[in-house]
Amino acid sequence: MPTLEEDRDTGADAADWERAAGPGAWRAGIQAGRRWRAGFPALLRRHWLFTAALGLGVVPRVVVMAGFAPAALFKLDTYDYLWDAIHLTPNPINPSGYSVFLWLLWPFHSLVLIAALQHLMGLGIAVMIYAVLRRRGAASWLSTLAATPVLFDPAQLLLEQLIMADILAMFLMIAALAVLLMRKSPLAGRSAAAALLMGASAVVRPDALPLIFLMAGYLLVRRLGWRRDGAALAAGLLPVAGYVAWFAAASGTVGLTNSDGLFLWSRTMSFANCATIKPPPDLRALCPDQQPAAQTPTAALGRLRPRQYLWNHDAWLWQPPSTGLVPDTAAFTPANNARARDFAIRAIEAQPLDYARVVAADASRAFTSSDQLHFPGTQPAPVYLTAANRHYMLAAVRGYLGTTAGIGPYLGVHLGTHVEQPYASLIVRYQDRIHLPGPVFGLIIVIGLAGILIPRTRTAAAALGWSAAAMVMILPAAEHEYAYRYVVPAVPLACLAAALAARNRGMDTLP
Image: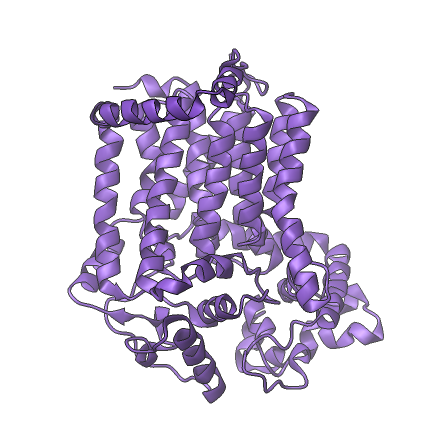
């Protein structure tokens, strides 16, 4: 029966490595490419079920691109990424790995191209999930089923259409795990490459940072040798260290951002009781009852969402008001961040059970309702924008595209996009009927967990996939607050773990 150590390969990796390093590697590579092209039709026939699903997955993506042009722009974050791509500077709120990606595509001046590449990333994620499962012995139907949410879930489609960091970080994260898991006993080079991809994901969205250590733990449990562990850990931390150095050179602060403490402080506003925390006088201004949001009529009904505390410009962190061109960054200074972190740590230490309660309550929402990312069916109404915000948004778009034509009238509206008919209506009807229900996602999580708890179905690969899914889903709720777009990257990981568990229970033998 499989164990956490699993069966080791019989030296195929080493042989492949030696052949690749030989003097005839170039000629052999050309010949292998010719053989692959000749065998491509047979490959499609052998994987006909997944090939059909992959082809069908292209259809809603084409309709999305036609219905929401040129892409979906998400609040101010999109414009921050565009602005930072133009100026190639690290952002104090979010890591700028995605801005570097946009900078590479800047010469094309096309949001349509970015969205198209992101949709290809979505399809690539499905291919990687399928390939890993097939390599590890899962049946074609089970492997295809595990990739289905990535192919067809409208929340996934929306992430791909957004000019946001989510899909790039997700693609790099899944690619890292796929490279690692394609071999039961990966060589040091493969392990390092996988960790390097995970490190790249971490500088796009920092929630992937703990997964570098999770991958090193996987190699340690597999007892593959300290060389592989060390190579993986060093390679994974290399992009992170490079980004930290860049951020330090630009801002004078060592870290990925100046926002981690402020986001965590906003999380504590959900439960903090200063009578219990007893903060020193210099931190009293950070207590919930001292915040402007606490004085609003709705606050009498209960605590507000963390973001409402964080982005209230009358709060302590925004004083004095800033008149700079780039909005919503003035509060994220090293001093404010350190002060907020100090309060947040005190709050969590004084009220650990309350902290665990609000995090669990937020994370559990993924299992009750999962159709929380919606494409609009009609053109959203204009919303109020301050003159400063509008000026900044227009400057970011104009700087990246060279023009604001086709975008200027839609600044600030829901998803900041121009809705085209009849395609938008088709997508709305699609998302009303096809999505991953929260209880089904919960069942997938349970199957994966059962697979790593039951000895005869337990594998290190399933444990890695399930643990990564749990981290990706829980960390945003623990650091700030719940949003379903933070859950979407956990879905393929949970499906991978569940499929591995089902494979080991013999379900892959079903007709």
